[in-house]
Length: 366
Image (tube, rainbow, N blue to C red):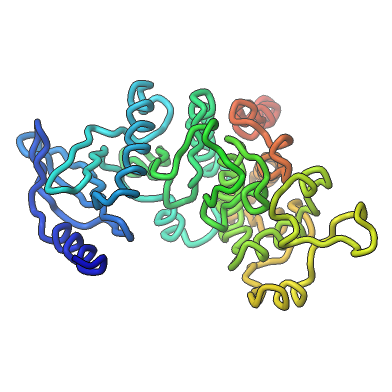
């Protein structure tokens, strides 16, 4: 059988299945929630209990199966740590049915991406705080276990139930997660708009890449649009460098892909690195740089220009603006270019924006 036919048959199986059987339970397929190259996620009802679950179904091909086993190992490890307490999705069971790998998860409400779309703009800082704090708790736990999520983005943060538990979120999708011991400079991970400088440059990395992603998400909530919407890795590092300055020379000297995006004076080996011009990059690669930024900032402090108070907040201008500046301060600490300087999850949780310590004197004086 040829590879295209094999893929076609696998997709037919996924589409035609109405019931899934594990060793202990029966799941009735209700609707498709999402699909990708290697599988689908479906909403199911657990027979006999009427409990809704989400089942991730993957093709049992060699490489997919290997990745699935790694995901199952990490999810099993997280399940032992009571994931509800640190805002990570709970996995119920894993099984193989009709040569399809099935991962059963608790059913959540909607992704942060969809919620942002429904809001249609920036979030008030009072709404940003609980979201960032909960993801910070998740990252603190992952760091303690030596796990890197590697794919943190609004699609992979889910609202549990925004009606009964407003703004309660959980981190999902550990399909690309890995242990720190497995981190390699050549790894191609993270969605581009949330990709850290160390991944772009192939610099040694660790859990700090997840903090960079969360910083990008926080900036997106603050402004209402993607901070660094690069169409290529060159555009991505160009946007970062034009806003925050170039990475340290030490980082550029050690990274494996620096020469792709930066240059030195050809006659002076130890001259400072400079970002390649757009024209030069296009000549060398054939890839045309694209400008996709909503606003071009000269520094992260400029993000404050996008923050607007609603009419209902005018009477609380001082409080709101003070809160906004603390929000921006945390974003800057999360988006430190050098991973060694980036705020850790534990320190994030004690930052004034999260603890609201900066608002104490306002409440006392009111």
